[in-house]
Length: 409
Image 1 (cartoon, rainbow, N blue to C red):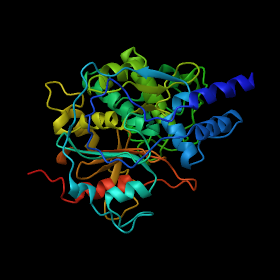
Image 2 (cartoon, rainbow, N blue to C red):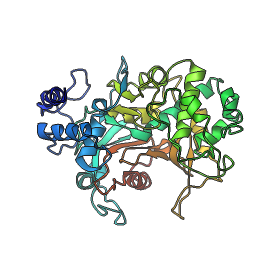
Image 3 (cartoon, rainbow, N blue to C red):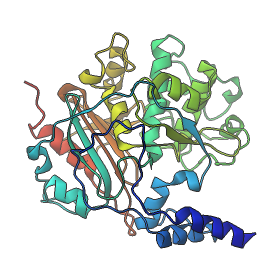
C-alpha cells in the first residue's frame, strides 16, 4: 500500500510547468516583474511528500515550507470558496519609482536594497502594490501568479470583517459579552468578556491553549479555556480568540464560515480565482491556523475593499462604520516596540497606526497592509528561512506608505 502511495505521488509530480488557468484575466503580456521562476522539480516534490509521509513537520523553513504554503491542499483538508461571476479587472500602471524604492539600512536582512532587489534576495514569494485601484508594482520571485498561497493567520482579518458585516446589520453587538451569544460559556473563562476585546486580541484567556485540528466539537473545547487576566487590559495573540469569533459568525449568520465568506466577501470583491479554506476532519473551518489559500491578486482585491477605490459602490462590503471602528482602538493596548510610533490591535488586524493605516502579518511572511487615506494596498507572500527568519515587508510597507510616493493630490 505504501508503494502505491509513493507511485501516485511520483505520477502527480512529473509535471514541472508554470500553472495556468484559462479563466484568468491576465494580459497576454503581463506587466509584473518576472525572475525566471520555474517551480519545483519532480524530485523536490517527491522529497517533500516523502518527508511528510514519514512523519516530518512541514514547518521547517526554506523550500520545504514554501512547498507547503503553495500546496496546502495536498497535505490538509480543504473546502472551496468559489470565485466571483464578475471578476474585478485590475489595471496595470507599473512605476519605476516604486520598483526602485530604497529600503532603510536597519532591516534585519536586505537593508539598503531597492524594493525589486529586496524581494529577490530575501524570503519573499510574491508582492503586489495597488495605488488608487491600479497595480503599480507586482513581482513573483518564488511562486506563479496563479498559485494559491496559504494566508495562514492573515485569514483572521476575514473573521474580523465578517463580524463587522453582521454588526452593520444589527445582528451582533460587540459591546456585549461572548457568553451572551453562547450560554455554554457562562461560568467559564469567557464569561463577561466583551466581543470587542476578543476582536482586539485582549480577551484575557490562557494563550497557550490552541484548538486541535481534529476537534469534534470546538465550542465544548473552548469552554475549558481559563481566564488569566481581565479582558481589555493587555494585548496577547491567541488563536482561540479567532476560533470563538468564527463560531460566532456561524451561529449568527446560520452559515458555515466558508459559505459566509464566499457569499458576503469573496464573490463580492470580484475574486478572479476560487480559493481554499482549511477545515478539520469534522468540517470546522480552520480560520485560526491554516486559513485561506488564494492568489496574491485576490488577497489584494480583499484589501481594496477597505480603500476609496474599492468602496465606490452603493453598498460597499466594508462600511464607513467599520473603517471608523477599526481606528477606534483601545488606547490601553499599545503593542508597539517602537517608541516613536504607537500601534494597536483592532478587529484582528495586527497593528493599527494613529494615522489610520493598518496591517496583518503572519509568521511565514504573509501580509496585507492598507492605507485608506492614501488609497494604498500592499499584499505579499513569503516563507520563513531555515533559521526561522522571514521578510520584513510589513516594515517596508510602512516605509512606502510614509515615503510620499503615494500621497494623494
